[in-house]
Amino acid sequence: MLKRRRMNNQTGFSAIESLLVLVIVLLIGFIGYYVWHAQKVTDKTLNSTNRIADNQSNTVNSFAACVKAKSSVMEETYPEQCVTKDGKKFTGPRSQNGWEEVISKNGGFSVDVPDGWNVWNYGGGDEMRFDGITYTKGMPVKVQTAATPYAGDSEVPFSIAILTDSSSYVSPQGTKTAYPLDGLEGHEYVQHWTADTDRGPGERNKGDIDYAFVFNMQNGDQLTIGYAAKAGQTNQIDLIKQVIATIKLY
Picture 1 (cartoon, rainbow, N blue to C red):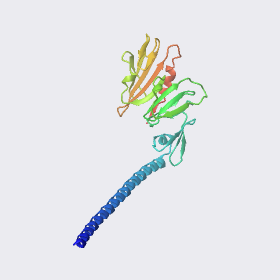
Picture 2 (cartoon, rainbow, N blue to C red; picture 1 turned 45 degrees about the vertical axis):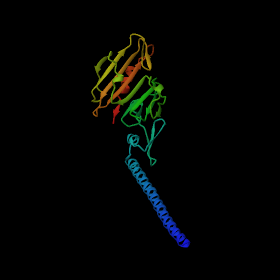
Picture 3 (cartoon, rainbow, N blue to C red; picture 1 turned 90 degrees about the horizontal axis):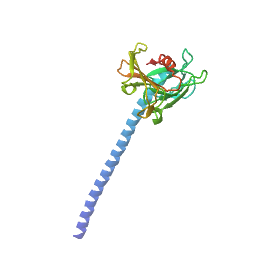
Picture 4 (tube, helix red, strand yellow; picture 1 turned 90 degrees about the vertical axis):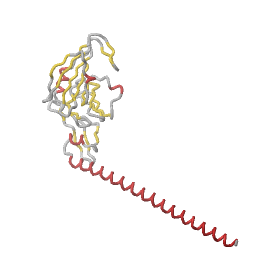
């Protein structure tokens, strides 16, 4: 009697052990399939991304096209140089007036920059800010790049950007006159400060003049340009307008 009960227990244990082994085998198989499938999807995505980058590199035949290609790398040289993924190198052109042509990081526009100027070219959008606009003939343009503007970059004398809303650049107290640019409808806004005032992150002093130029683009965006002329310093609006005239949209 005792022997039969022991045999029944052994039979029960064998069945449970077999079931556990089956569950473990199935679990291992499922995990293996999941890992294999995930790796296959990752490889497919990487291959697709690489094909797109390769196709972009193969179709790049100019400095402007190189700048637009997402796989390209910009070198901080003078003039600027752009290198494609497959190693093709393109040098940024100099304009007819001898100034250096700089293309925005997103490839939305280009502008001819006078000798000696310092420009920050931001990759987060089509935006340039100039923290040095003293013309020095024969001195190379200094072009620096960053993903986004730093907090201290807000108060620069000159800036160019493609924006969806330019209202922060336009003073309601200023004058407004028509100012077209290469077929684009636009306006020039001028604000003369007759008293010292605190305005946001920066302050305006008596005698300061703020200039804003806003041009309506076909896609609804606005090419927006700002220039701050400080009291007691040379007003360079004539040179600024020469620079604005060189802007090209892509």
